[in-house]
Image 1 (tube, helix red, strand yellow):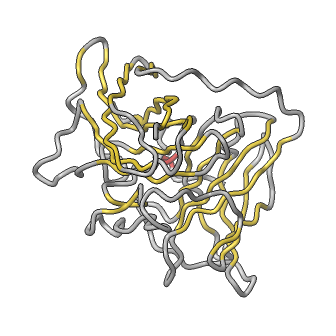
Image 2 (cartoon, helix red, strand yellow; image 1 turned 30 degrees about the vertical axis):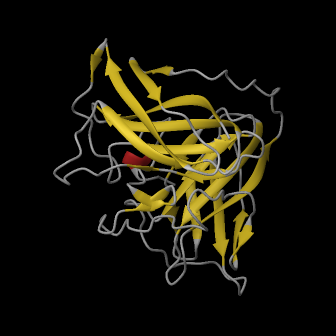
Image 3 (tube, rainbow, N blue to C red; image 1 turned 135 degrees about the horizontal axis):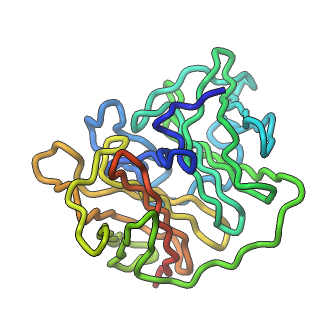
Length: 279
């Protein structure tokens, strides 16, 4: 099975859906994002998602898993039947996020949907390990939702320690600098500055309707927080770098892992940070 080619992160680094401003309550969306509005208006601003496989009558059901094969799964409705009708959010019908339970091996891919409701994607797993898989979608007639389920590939190695908090991250020849502080129970700006070879990058490319996409996972339980960038490409006010600013609400104090996707040179890159939310 082939995934949408420009959505293949860690294969082509083009997977992490940029959930535009105000989408997701974290992806809490700009009305008018090409059908991307309301991507993830889930249970309240900053409310964590992805801790349960079933919610609001929908259930995430993994089917086949294999490190050398594809991963298939279904979303079933309250009647137990596979859901086959979805509304696109940020230019994809479903965003699949896969991370090892130690918060390493992060990938964000966009599976293809069969007519019978089966989702298929070339293996998104980073070798044998214990994983948590998040499906972020909007079924027709329902609210956006993120479901999560554990998936284990036998033979996993020991957990990798959570990296210490740091203000900079290096990826693919880029240096990304984080300014801002997560705050428990209230909104806080997080600004990322993208540079390459010491020079600010001022020509970031739109990726899934935004100049950046940020996923935040709570280290304690892998709760999935929705965050959104300020502004959007083509709005007449948002510059294509070097800064990308997000609005985030951490539900509780403590450590989080942040995954920033940005597109430059026709490739999506992912910078990872550990950040601590304060009371």
